[in-house]
Length: 402
Ligand code: ASP
Ligand code: MG
Image 1 (cartoon, protein in one colour):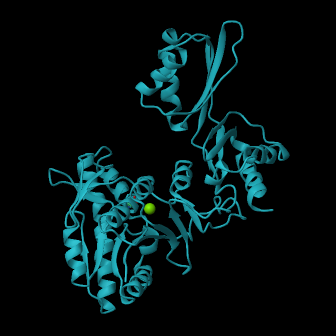
Image 2: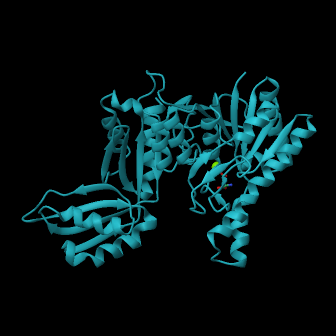
Image 3: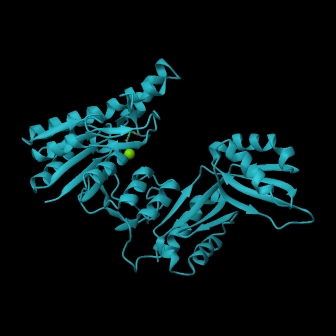
């Protein structure tokens, strides 16, 4: 007998038929004798549809009222699922964020969890009921409804797993697990049996939208055993945990991010404090800088290149131009047609030659590398956007398809 938290994404509960299918998955775990707590997202595109509805009435609604609206989606899901389980003759109760004591801060639309009492859930489990919890929502100190940011139901699930000391937190969606690359782009992408929290976090920040980032951070901090699996194909998914088996492949995945732009500022003085001035100007605007390259100085000047999110490009350029006198540079150039291709793998710490394999794959497919950056478990290169798909397949083939 175990305590299991299961979370089902919006696509898994999109209509009556899918709800009934998920009800069977829940019923199975429950009738095996486990305590089962289930977190649900809003059905299908409900959250997007609610946002559209809001904008039809007021393009600039207050964040408080947005949360009031968006939280309804999850409430529909838990009520309908409870009805499906009732039909199967199982004892079940659906609960909202406030009923489970999900306390958050006051940042509407992107609230952080502050406390979670879960008293009601424990009492319901003691009565041998299946507990269904509306994901993504909480309540702040003004007793107002808040939401945890898009995709936040994953975080609700992990938080419950922490507080209830669950044996496992299963995240069900329409994909079978975490893949070595985007299966829509790379036909040879393979499902991973397991992946570390750190690798998962890197992949998520590179645009692999499998799990809400904060859910993985929390799972890592409290060592929650997670599993990502499909609600359609009944087979084991990908386990997310602290350490994975050794002797795995050198890397876990290849990812691509096209929300990238490159900026270069030319002929800054080659003296202390210049980089500080450049990045201070950007940090004032809360712009994140990613890969940074400083050219070797010529005469008394040098160039600095770096990347920012493409969505921040205009703002970054404006901030730098405004600080041009203070920083002291002759010219600025930008390129939005770039993409970042990265490999991620905890195995690279112990296997030399991973970078060489990656660069060889790029060379063989004639892709030119712009900037390069590395961390303990990641190597990223900046390439021309039009070559990014080719770069990703070549690297994937080199590591996984031989
Ligand atoms: N329904 C919310 C969203 O679409 C939360 C979630 O799905 O996790 O972002
Ligand atoms: Mg989601």
